[in-house]
Figure 1 (cartoon, rainbow, N blue to C red):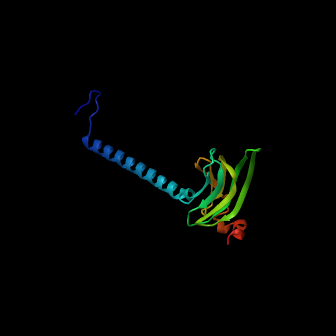
Figure 2 (spheres, rainbow, N blue to C red):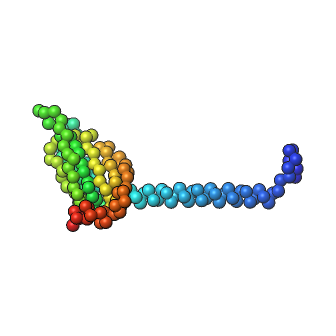
Length: 163
């Protein structure tokens, strides 16, 4: 078949081109799936480390502050800062309160004072050496990795604090 610009179309080549494009598309899809799986696995432990304010009926949402590690692995260097409200005084920033080692399946009440929920912020390192930040609204952000220190059990500072 002659095209209007003088080239001849080889139908066998068209099939080869279509197969190549399909292969590249499949490889791209597989790479995307692999990346998504890797990100989900990396966040798996961090998603299970959280905090909440138990308002106990207070109209402004103020209440006691709790921290929980629901994962099967400990987290390290967990620090949490928050603001305490008292109707008689100005708000007061507390913290950060730091736990060198926060064990697996562990929940702890950090404050029984009236904590303002939107003031809470938490940082920690998971068992793989990845640093995380959790905001008051629950948003979890990776903030980096432990630069050259390896896993927590290979870091002399954290190893000494691990039971």
